[in-house]
Image (cartoon, rainbow, N blue to C red):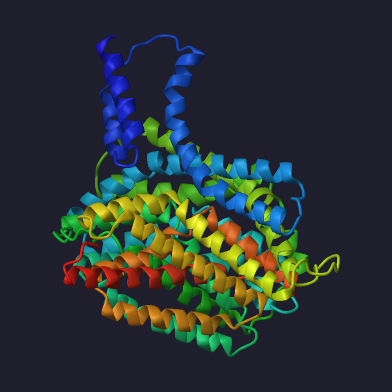
Length: 562
């Protein structure tokens, strides 16, 4: 075999085995060093080159989407004896979501991550603190606009009752731009605060104890006002939406590079913690925004509906929306790379390829979102209460006695949260990383099941809240008060890990499904809105992970093997 073919084969094999560990900059550099033999590629050659590369990435999305979708379908088929409406359309929508997400993550990795990694390690030596903080805040803000799950908020507004939750309906409709801006501003502030934490080696425990109580106080105040109470679930759910495949890797690349450049990168878990801030500060900003506009005259939602971009879901409209979301972020990274860091952009063709693929992936994801994930979640949410109460559309009697039906619904909710978490590729990668960084003290299996237990329990609490119209604010106050108490007792490393684990479980697949499930449940039981499942799914793993960390510390002090 010629030498260049052997080298290229070895390189592809390395990608297949270690595609998560190879930095994109090294990939690009390695590709440029390979000799190029001009010739004609056959179809079989293209298949052999592309299939191993694509199949690994598509399998990740398959593992994240299919188990959760099958659980939703199986519960309806086996327990409720119902079938999906427009099953073929839902299947095509889910396929579009998986393909789009695969392309989007690939595009972000190829088109944006090389900028972020380079800037993260070189910017501290080229710029002052003020410029670094301004760049971080702007990066976090623009990255939020590019998150795929942001589109879910727009779709969720359709199921909100305008009569019973007028302010919430307006925030998800005509005022949606203001809502997304509040979320993005919260992430931007979180990134700036996270960078300060890296610079001055602040403990995440201290920041959590300072930030969470005001968020809970704002929630308690909002609960006392009928117009603001429905916004509480939206605000806390927005915290989960922000920690997606754009914000997290870009922000961590900047933060870890900054920690290394300042000599504070020795802590093996130093990279954890910044995701927590990006989950908490948007809560406060959304609640503050709702309070600021609460006295304003609500817009005519029916008249404004036709002008909203997500009511015209066409490929052209989605392409324009994707370009508006991604290009400002690319422009920011390019300008900082060239003007501040003063380094040329290497591998321009690869970067252009990445940006194009990211735009195409976002278009496919958004087109499949409503027809696939959202429709599946809505149908499941509409049918689930039939297990213990009359069907909300047909009036058919409940299928089971009330206690048995409620028990089945609780088991279903737990399985949805637990199963979705077990199948989450990001959590498996996180578990392997943590086991290596802690020298085996925190096993990957323990981490995965502890997080899954917390998410499953949170899903049960969120579903119960919707079914029985319980006050979400007090559930959140109770859950986060317990989390704060465990935080005081825990070591800093486990605090970082536990509070960040909530962000890992809320990806671009679980967010639309759980939001749609909540919207469907709310519509079926006559609730004003169905937010809050994501909020409880985020609180649950914090508690379970902190408890697991305390258990590990206790066993370690006793000399037992964890």
